Image (cartoon, rainbow, N blue to C red):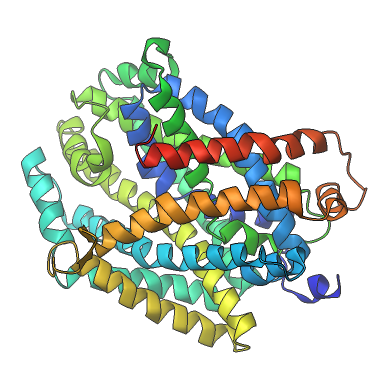
Length: 454
């Protein structure tokens, strides 16, 4: 354990929770969760989602915590140390590759958030639905603008990463996460005060079980898996900075509470406003970048100044959520390169940043400017999303559960879970049962559902 004490650590329990929650809380909560809830019946989806977080998200998160803290190294080396040199070490390499590829195209979407912050500030995104759709289409397919915003966003991320674990990641998380909650609460209050906002609140909190079917269950299952950043290398990398005193079960519960709270607040932010102006809650993935500009414009038409402020704050909120996630994704590759190539943190971060700008540029160009940038009939952006989201993530998550549940030395798992016997092992049996049986079955269902097999 000597290396664990020499390695950089988070400086406080609050830092552990906020940094790791920042990894989990991102566009998946503020963007994907509301439209998933809208498409799957609102309150019924939320109830199933919370259950899925308990039975899938927490056990998977603890599994990565155990590997990361025990290995006290980057994700690839952490798996290798726990696997004892066996072929299971390659699960760690898969996590690093997945995190790196996601960083490249996620930075593009993050750059869109900055464009919309700017658009909201100068008032260029206000208009009817057709205008909003044209605005997004023209911007996302532009040959230069999205790449510029991608590079700016990665530059901000790079600045945080090179400052290290405590002075960079932890310090920024302690600022960004409270800011995210403040912005959420401001917009939630404004949204819930609109006429007919009660319909949106009822949609979120009054379950209609007649809408419950396998798609609601599988959708909630998949959302719980992705919104917690499972199998991206982020959780494992951050866990390598945990101290021996960090309560893994307690931390996972706190992080999942934050994750669920942000997701529900995002719904309260969006649906009361949508119902107020008669917008369907099942607007899909276009909800944030196409539907909502029109929603804010209509909802606050009587008081344009409030509509302007809410619109700006909303897209600042999106950018903050994207930043906390991108920092954790960037750190996966930076830690790997720094330790495996034996170079400084600054050089490792520079290589990752430049590489991801190049990947992001090609992904962005594939959406319109250079539509010939495609493979297997998909633009590079969609291909990266498909390969990482629908193949690498479920495969990595499944293998991690099998590894912790069936392969890893039992005593190591017990020691890490109980902090070497200093914590009660009341839920150890439940954790092992979930990670051995429940989680693999759930992840297989997610995988098959994505491929339209079930």
